[in-house]
Amino acid sequence: MPRVSQDHLDARRRQILDGSRTCFARHGYEGATVRRLEDATGLSRGAIFHHFKDKESLFLALAEDDAERMADVVAEQGLVQVMRDLLAEPAGDSAHAPGADWLGTRLEVSRRLRTDRDFRERWAKRSEQLTAATRARLQWQRDSGNLRDDVDIDVLTAYLELVLEGLVSHLAMGLPADDLGAVLDVVEESVRRHRGR
Image (cartoon, rainbow, N blue to C red; front, side, top):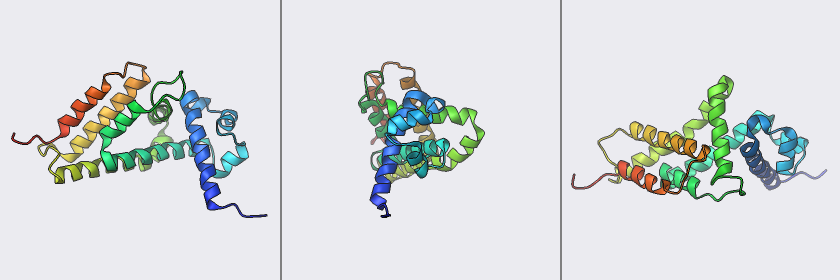
């Protein structure tokens, strides 16, 4: 029997993550049944669970994948850009708000953090990546003279993370997002260093 290439395995894993992201966004963690995951990915349960031990491992991998992608954006452009990308992401279909697939995963993570102690412990090990990327980006901005220096980096990191959580909640409630770009301009301006002060 011929061996499957690593590229094929990586592509299959990506297919599972992309399909399951849509499934979890539409149905939540509990509603994302194996049958729905099969439909969303176009693969059998055997193919899905060959790559992931169980549904929780799949969801954690998906949430971690999203966190890694966000951390990459933070490293290059900052956490405010992650928020702008969330606002700009096109709708998957007319039933979804902008960024609905990513938003669905993020909301499901938040829900499970509140209700599932084991998940909270497993997620804590993975979530530090985004915070670390935000801290590093802010430190780089401070070293470049672009970031205000009267507030501790950890405080600014917590501030931006709270704004992100507020944005996620706002979008989850289906509230209007039309003017949020201007709000993010204010957030960005609030952490900048203003020369001559």
